[in-house]
Length: 154
Image (cartoon, rainbow, N blue to C red; front, side, top):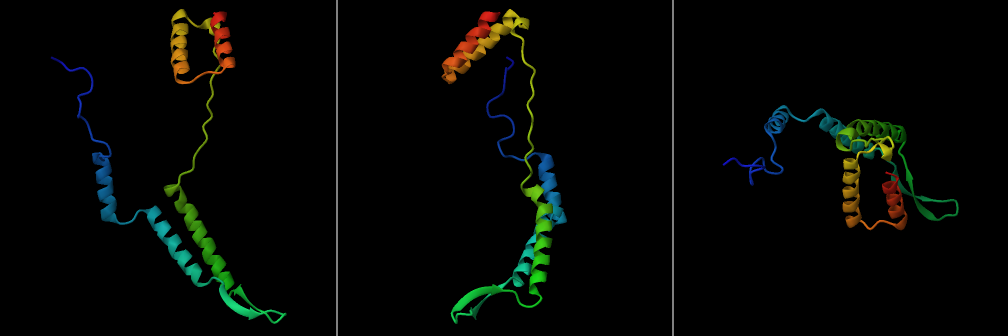
């Protein structure tokens, strides 16, 4: 006898990679880091280097004779710090799409339906859908009135 439908337990198990995914991962492992991994590595190196030039906390005596802690750059370090920081920022911007892709907005457009053009079968289908939705979610009075108005138009 011929089976109808899916055989229980058949098919690839969840989270099992396909042949192409396995081959791609093996090739990447053989060839070394991928470009976006290199960019991220460079960004981290630049950030580490920049931290070596950051302002250091020093104790100074202010004009009132009170000791206070302030952050100061050593001579020539401020420009180097900002330069390395900007390079790290640029590298991070280039790597970011690989780790946190941008979300794009999608406009949903639809043409209004003229109920007078629907067939009896289409109206019946819509009524069944409306019934299922109303069982799942309690509609407001205004929703019920609008649905009745649409149904009586036809």
